[in-house]
Image (cartoon, rainbow, N blue to C red; front, side, top):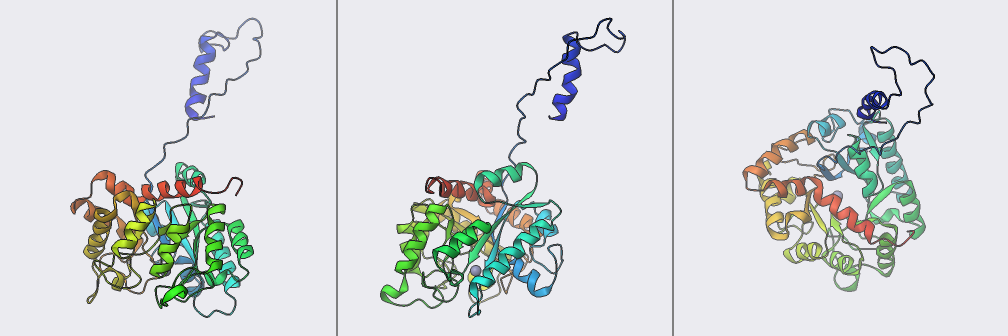
Length: 365
Ligand SMILES: [Zn+2]
């Protein structure tokens, strides 16, 4: 029962003559037992979604032996709270050449689950948009787990199902080396080898069936286009910028941006300096320029923020940790984003996107 219902109850009972008034003393005869009405609780309002679509915090927590509160982290829990971030996508990243990539994925996923457990209730794992909304209404931080690197899917579909059962909701089929499923933007190959493999096509279909979000960041251009075309659900590039402003293979060409948006997808502007601007150290104003470019190119409903904090090597000046997202938001407003556009970029776009992925999943999937 809500506290307002509780305070209302005595006056209702008084009005019905079922409770002694403060001045009236005890009724002469025993009253009939009262069955308390249980009004439908009104859920707390859904706060604005403030999302970061990609951080590598668990890698730093493991490598540095610190916890989520450490000031050595760019996306520490206190820093996220300072910026009002309430949705954080934590990457289970698979480095190149690890001897046991599936084991590495399990280690990272379990590490993320432990981060959540040790947050003293401040954060909660979410596996879908409904859970995300519920956690946000409770005033907590929703943690989404992403696999970054298809090499982890050593036993194919069985490993994907295993990771999904553990709580993985987003899947990137490659990092900087080709996997058995997709080619990478780091060293794209010509011809058929440069896209999705047959096994990759099956993995896209299974991801759709299971309601997993497909992440094309790090994929080659051909693999990205094939994934967008093949997927039943929209896809996202969780941490990728526009090549128009920083022409590197890791970023997205105008054609790729349009393809992702036309399918209902999402692109998260990312902060690694050399992918924000070429030829000089990046400033926060360069991230503003990238974000504005994305919004003006494909619409704010297709744009979010995917910092890559705790995984990037060079943070832009003025944007060194999560707490500084408040300043980025102020700059985006000053640069001309409307209130509605900013709400979408902050995170409403991500909730829209995840709902669309959920709607496309197989019945019972
Ligand atoms: Zn990455």
